[in-house]
Length: 305
Image (cartoon, rainbow, N blue to C red):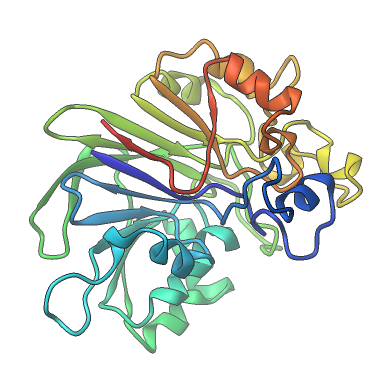
């Protein structure tokens, strides 16, 4: 299986257009200590020719341009190697890229019933897409199932949906209790048995999630914030990390202490907010991530398992 990190930043990217925090200032420097990043999305494939997207970032056009494998191939006037999009939630930075895929064939979108309703009724992205390519909704499987191509044939991959502790998007003012706000996915290569888990939004660690994290070869995990009150400390917001649906990396109760003890060969933080000091390449926080056997995700990072 081939895994390509198209984008590794949280909403707004790095640098964020209106942010002048220390990380964004450094990212705007030529040769600075912070690499620019687009908003989080991943492409996976069993054969390097037919690909599935994990989330559809607002930066998807630039991400496709930076990865020629996703360009149109062959003699047809229009074509795409994208076979489907698996959504982890209805957040804007995970879904707005769907609108940029409107010129193609009917979109196959994997999303929980809750996310389908939000995209159809609250946003409404799906109604706009129905005037162009249309959407084929697929409710993701909760147990290992074949990830099929457009024509119904095998892709060489299997997938399963992972319920995650999370919260509804900020734009949702009324909601019902239940699961489906935020999910992750485990994608498995049927030939090698190797797998990747993609979980860019995790509010906290619970018993169910802890049982998943050690059962993969590549873990792409929520790296949004380093500290619980990072937004307030940087002077750019008032909400804490948990209030925004994210488990911070640092501190005695942070995700880094958990990830450091896990077995996956590749443990990579993604969906990183522009305020997060792990983006500064020589910062103590970045060094702590590497010392724990983890990595700070970068756009264009590729892994084959």
